[in-house]
Image 1 (spheres, one colour):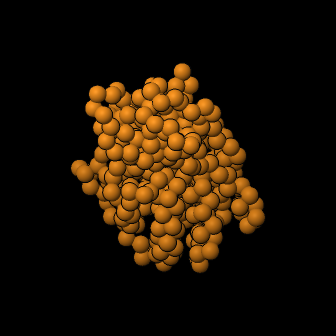
Image 2 (cartoon, rainbow, N blue to C red):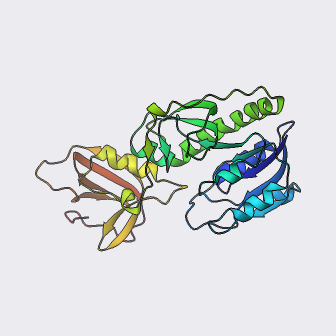
Image 3 (tube, rainbow, N blue to C red):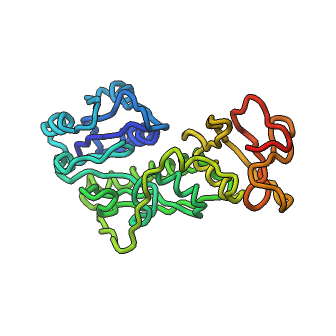
Amino acid sequence: MRIAFIGCVEFSHAALERLLAVPGAEVVAVVTRERSDFNADFRSLRSLAEANGIPCFLCSGESDASMLKWLSGLELDVGYCFGWPRLLSSKVLSVPRLGVVGFHPTPLPMNRGRHPLIWALALGLKETASTFFFMTAEPDAGPIISQVMIPISEGDDARSLYSRVTDTALKQIDEFTRELSKGTLVATPQDASRANHWRKRTALDGRIDWRMSGRSIRNLVRALAAPYQGATFLLDGVDVVVRKVAVAGVAPENLEPGKVLSVEGNTFTVRVGDGALWILDHDLRELPRVGSYL
């Protein structure tokens, strides 16, 4: 089975490595990027492709016309697109004989759209999923070929959840690739009536407001932990990155949100909407004074 692989993030690299070991899967083309200005988990597939003697196309810009031309002459059976920063055109999707398989780490049809792992953690969800589907012109809407639910624990952050999703997805890739090559794969149409769409996040979505509850701030911080850029709060016009916090409990009701309650070592507590919060990992060079405001 002749496969073209498209991707440019950490998950893409892990998926391609696994795919290369699946019997019957012949990866004949890799499409990737040399660099990215917006993927925090960016990783080029160029070195992996070259190490395995696979022709590699380096995509740049927003147009996929050159990608389309390059793929069109390869007699592809299927495409795998895992971790790509923009939508593929209908023309590209129609090049492989069987279509293009996409990936989305949510329980589709629910939670279609942007930044799925970040939203799942920021919203405090208890579970997500690893879902593979045939891509269509409508994002995240094609027939599902494999879906496994994944629990989210209170101790999870972006890195631990990213790793668990990756481990689950690699096992799925083994299974559905074998089924594809045998011609036994069954795809299930999505129920569009159950769908919702997560919007694109902005820098403001990552900013801490001390009027938020301690739990909400903690969820935001763990959602934006590595490999992402971190949650921030604004101090003297500068964004300060926060990487880890813990709910500290109650605080005097007559104190305002944002007031520094205590300082201990390189950590400090802040009055928040419903109590107090420990700030455990941050990039402040100088700690705030007790009684000051953030």
